[in-house]
Image (tube, rainbow, N blue to C red; front, top):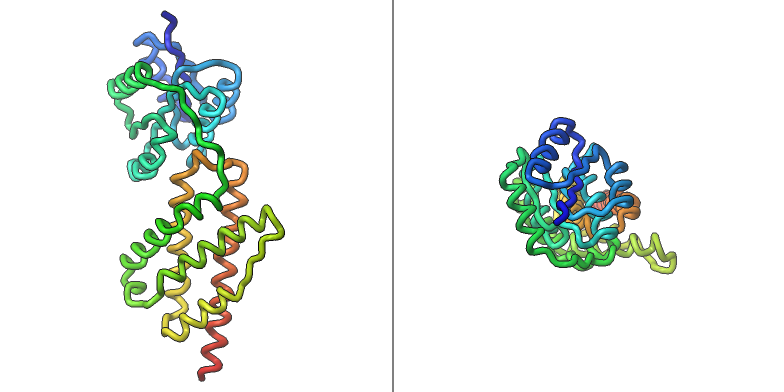
Length: 269
């Protein structure tokens, strides 16, 4: 029986020497790649049974690019992610449907071997989900984004005392979705009256401007977390421009809010 073929991807020279050597000692045929470009070339040129990739190859999250390529080109291959950041475990658990398994560095060789053996003997053909746009993810997980935003607000000592309603985040997420869709379809209208109305409402409630800015920042973080957890099913080529659209939209909303807030303050004086 031919030895299982493994592609090991990591930018740390020491790991590229030790882990493949251990795998070869246990009868595996191993190729090692130091960067995303080399990994993608090998995936195109050779067949593999297993991919083991660091999460951050040079840049944070690069491992997702390699996993996505393997899923599309060789869907039957087992995919395992290795991460040096234990805090990222929550995000990895959220995408376990796309990654077969993962390990946290420092890598336990025995655990890795056990993991490979287990998945090779129980694997089924992987059916990757169709690539999606961020606007779809925001639409489907808007309630979760608002919930995460609210939890962050409740944990913030100053924001906890404000009365910013959940509608603030709900409406803003919906407007960001419209903005992303308008970016692909010029027929999709986006108004800015809602931003001004949010600013006037904050002034009427007595919420200070710094707290409006902080609420905006926390919503940005909640959106980024959800996008990060869905990297494997997103159109890679659209991630950066879409996130720039989201950032610009949040910035413009804040500017309109503050402008309307100050105008309402002047009228009330």
